[in-house]
Amino acid sequence: MVIQIRDVVWERGSRTILKGLDWTVKRGEHWCILGLNGSGKTSLLNMINGYIWPTSGSISVLDRKFGEYDLRELRKEIGWASSSMDLRLYGSDSALKIVLSGKNAMIGIYEEPLKEDKAYAEHLLNELGCAHLAEYPYDALSQGERQRIVIARALMTKPKLLILDEPCSGLDVFAREQLLAIVQSIAEQENGPALIYVTHHVEEILPCFTKSLLMKDGEVFAQGTTSSLMTSSGMSDFFGVPVEVVQQRERYWLTVKGEEWKRI
Ligand SMILES: Nc1ncnc2c1ncn2[C@@H]1O[C@H](COP(=O)(O)OP(=O)(O)OP(=O)(O)O)[C@@H](O)[C@H]1O
Image (cartoon, rainbow, N blue to C red):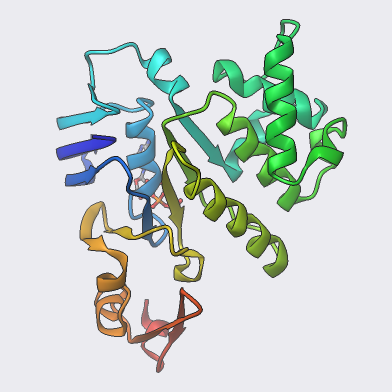
């Protein structure tokens, strides 16, 4: 099992932020997590990475039960690429150095890298179409280029689970499609990682994401096969306003209908 979450509750002070989540990700599945701002997506991801602990309930990740394993070891098997990671990386470091720093699941590297690690980092940069950026300082790169570097960094440990947290935020439509093509190709790799893709936008749900988790107000609103969830009526219930979802070229496209959204 990649992820098994049973009745997980997370409380902060008097607030219950995650309210009894149940979710299972099996090997071979790629999931999309969809939810509005504040629905608890980041809290859930932080829990999977062991940055926060559930108040009650149980979690196991990559067959290891929470509380019974060395988190540092587990984190090497989880790649995490988030646009918010920008802030934590050393901007003046070269793109190559930043990718290499993923090897120890750490920010920055202080030791001379091994030859094979450097070769693998260069291979990843090449796979993600960024070979030409290797020696560029990270903070000189565009948002789309940075996102690829962050994903390459997350792949450096050859993770079994890769979490992509809103990787397309801030990207123009072409950079978005280029990045999505990379995500689809990672999903198609033999023995590649299980993907968890977090987004606000149904348009980003690629064919590889055959399963979806819809989060709302700290709860699982619905989960299951993406095709069964991405319907106009299902998504209208989820958002609480009428929307229309159409499927075109193996992707979903959403339009808000009427005026009810103004009351949100
Ligand atoms: N450490 C914390 N202490 C108190 N409240 C928190 C903490 N972390 C998150 N929250 C609250 O929990 C709720 C869910 O936040 P979370 O960041 O998980 O949502 P999200 O779905 O990732 O939102 P977004 O799409 O905006 O990133 C929010 O109301 C947030 O203010």
